Length: 388
Image 1 (cartoon, rainbow, N blue to C red):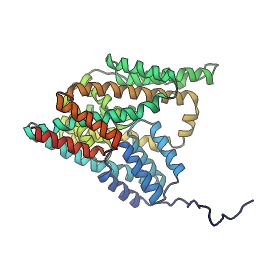
Image 2 (cartoon, rainbow, N blue to C red):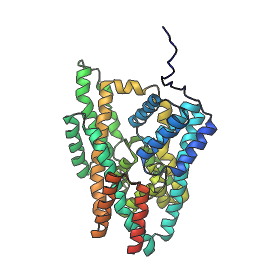
Image 3 (cartoon, one colour):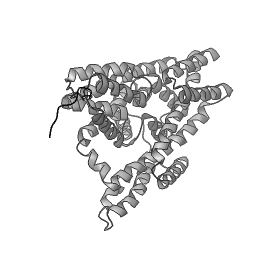
């Protein structure tokens, strides 16, 4: 029997529906102002679309966040695409995603131009000298936040993480490490859920064929395919992308040096919006303005497509034991990749007492005082400039 709520009972307001122009304006503003990485982006979106504008309930927002974490690509960008799709259909999907990504992409392209033009000057080199240790601290903080969540489910997943880290350190292709960990995590769940063996197609073994391929020369077509693959296989936050960039562009293709990679990651940190716009910077280094546009389009395209396709399937995937376990395995392998790459990048960036001290102080400020990464990057740049 229905009853009227008492006067003192909180009444949950009905969600409001937005038009695509409102969606575009909101995410354009966030694209210019959302510093601090994926966690900060998600918090800002929750504040805007749940608390202030009441476009979504808390429950629906969490459903979308969970869906964004289940598919490859930049989770905060995909969350904004989910919100746009929910509010204004396919037009809202495109408006939200493009407006959130475009400001950071333009800034990254401008910084790539400045880097190519002035990067050899001593003062610019000094700025990068101070920023690199802060980048190491930011990635380390992300790793410390992700690792407990990924590993706490079982000892088997912890063992898979150790094995994935060892395989990465020995030079195994990053995509093969992810798929192997996912398959090994899914196998026990598949045996329990389907003792008659009907789950074998769910182990996704054929995807291993998407692994390593021989090096190729830099070109717009090759650039598009490399970044399309990265956008389709990188699970977790944008920081996991660093592991794949190193594996593909430094070790396999030899398109970048270690120093150029860490500089690209630094640019991804000092600009607002998604960390995946590191691809814009790298694309410009490799093939100019057209390379920047191609790399940006390619790395974000899978996320847009997957968000449009995955909405009806998300609940089913997580409730299917082998597929849910596969995703758990992929997540712990992603954490292992991040750990190995963080160590390798630190070796190239922490070159003296000052850089080591900058990294240590930055990590302490991030963990203890929750200082914004943006201010730490500014501080590192000032210290590097003065040192030069």
